[in-house]
Structures are given as C-alpha cells and as structure tokens.
Image (tube, rainbow, N blue to C red):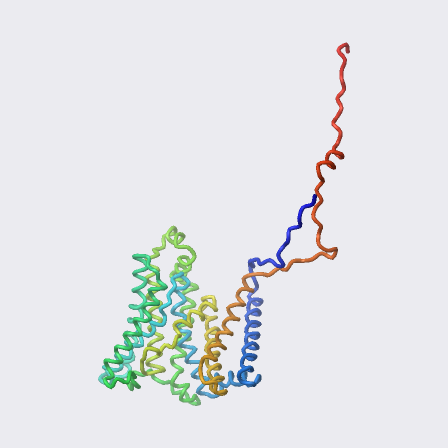
Length: 398
C-alpha cells in the first residue's frame, strides 16, 4: 500500500523583508521602459508608424519653449495638490477631496478678482485672493474632518461628495455673473501674480517662474515638516495605529483636524496659483482632474515630497506627450491618449508587486520526482517484528 504523492505548486509568492533602494528603482525604471515599448506597439497599430510615437511624445512635452514651460507649470500645480494630500494620507485619512478643495479656492479667488477689480492696488488684490483662497480650502477640508472626529463618518465618501458640491457652486456663480447665458466667465484682467522680468527668459517663463519657485519652496517645507517636526511624527503615529497614538498621549481628534486644515490650506494655495498665476478665470473643470491624479502621484512616491517631483513629472509628461500623439496622427479623440497614459501607469503600479514580493519557482531534482515513501503492510510488520525478550525462570529450590 503506497501513499499518493502530494502535488506542489509551480511557484511560491513570499513577501520581501527588505530590498535595496537602487534595486527598487531599477525595477521601476525597467517597468517604465517596458511600458513605453508596449505603448509604442499599440500606437504603431493605429498610426502605422513605430518610431513616430516617441518623436510625438517628446515634441508634445519639449517641442517648443512654450510647451516646456507649460509642462513645468502644470507639473507645479499637480505637485502642489499632491503635497496637500500627503499629510492626510500618511495619517490614513483618505482625503479624496483635493479636487473640490482646490476648485472652491479657485472660485473665491475669481470672485475677488471679478468684483473688486481695479478698485485697489494689484498687489493688495493678490494678497486678498491668497487669504480668501487658503481660507476656502481650509473650510472645505475641515468639514469632513470635524464629522470624522465627532461621529466617525466615512471620510472617503464625504470628501468625494464635497467635490461635486464645489462644482455646483462654481456653475452657479458663472450663471449668476454672466447674464448672457454663455456659461463662460472670460478672462479676468486684475489680480495677476507679478512676472519675474529676467533677461533672456522667454515671456512664458517669466509668467510661470514665480509659481514654480513657490511650489519648489513649499515642497522643501513639507518635506521638513513631515520628516523632522513633532507634528509630522504625530501624523505618522496616528497613521500606524490610533490606539498606540492614544496610549502615548496624542490627541487623535486634534491631529485629524489640524492635518486637514493644513491639507486644505495647501489646496487653497494651489487654487490661488492656478487662478492668479496661470488661467485667470474659473470654470467647473478648471482643476481638470488633478485632484484625483495627485493621489496617484503621492502614492507612487510613497508620500515622499521630494520623490513626488519625479512622479509628477512622469504623469505630466505622459499627458502632454499622449495629447500630441493624438494631434499629430489625427486620431480625433483624446481617448487614445488616456489609453496610453493608463497602460503606462498600470505598469508603474504593477512593478510595486515585484518590489514588495518575491516569486520562487519550484526546483526539480536531477533524479526526477521523489517517489512516495513505502509503508509496510500488516503481514510484513508481523514478519519483521523483533522477537519478544525471553525471561529466565527460577526454580523454587534455588
């Protein structure tokens, strides 16, 4: 009688204990290269031009000086929103409301620019827009925080709902301010950020350079705040375990409200830069989904503000390049660009699996599969059983 051989799986998946940083980035870079090749193959199917895909991608991002500066300016706005969401996400407060918090600050800035206009100096109007925009962003962020800390509501649904509420308020303001019914507010001539008149810098660069520098400074400040300050430490502890935070004396409700106020303030700062330094108007789609894209930017960078510069650049480059591919090959819709961007992001996210887990394949021995162990039956056991020990008998007389 033999025991059936137990079949083993072809491979095992085990979690990595640690991986060198250089090896992790090598995996990410490899995933990016593979994603570019896959995207180019798909583009070749539709455009019949394999090499032209890379040329159009590069041209869309860096083809002209204006395109290059526009890319950096869009990168700065996206990075600023990602910085705003980072403290909340490190605290495990799932703030999905970056879109609405930025948009409501854009609305307040536009209202100030529309009604105050040229009645006060431009510098004072810019300052009023800054205060109003930051205040609006903080208000929009602290409302879900108060409900979470008081009644433990679901912050994901709450902040998501606030996004659509902000869009409705923007649409209402435009319909009220623009009596013609066109639904377009138009260009606002007052309250613009000053341009940096640097010799040799193109006009587009002078227009966007101040916004870019402000976001760069903010990035360093947020990195220091999260890495070295007491508040940053409390955010990390609350994110790891609420019970541990309470045990060591951290006021969890206070940390939640304070962190969301900070998150809303940075979103307000992003909205202020967007209206007074780039678009000079407002509409319901002004943020253009950056509030949701910023979640991806922050997550890919592992909530490291300095690494977010690279991830924000990657996402912005893909958007600009894919849009240029659509234009060059007259594909008609931006859906193709969304497909290209989605494929690339899928590979980047998927590579995190190979960073966190190891795949171990089954090794086959040269002698072939191991036979099942032979178990003796009852007759064999009876025949080979050792004889019972014999005992000596002692006679009574001895």
